[in-house]
Each structure stands twice: as C-alpha cells, then as structure tokens.
Amino acid sequence: MPETLSSLIPLLLPFDAMQAPFMQQALLGLLLLAP
Image 1 (spheres, rainbow, N blue to C red):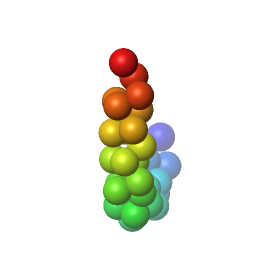
Image 2: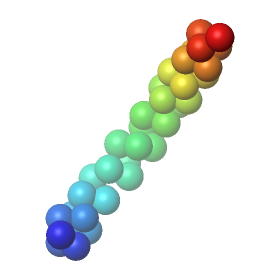
Image 3: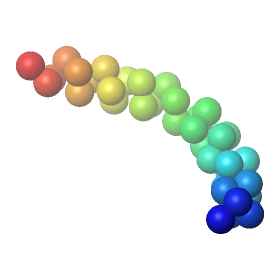
C-alpha cells in the first residue's frame, strides 16, 4: 500500500497542478448552476 501511494503521489501532483484551473472553473460553473 505505501509503495503504491509513494509512487502515485508524484504522478498525481503535476496532473493536479495542471488541472487545477479547469477544475476550479468547473466547480464554479456547478455552483452557479446548482440553484
């Protein structure tokens, strides 16, 4: 378990950094459409 986590975290961090603006816009859109 720890081995897979330590190997996945470096892969997920740059992906999360690249997807952060898109995810923020998507979440804002969902919040605006929610009501």
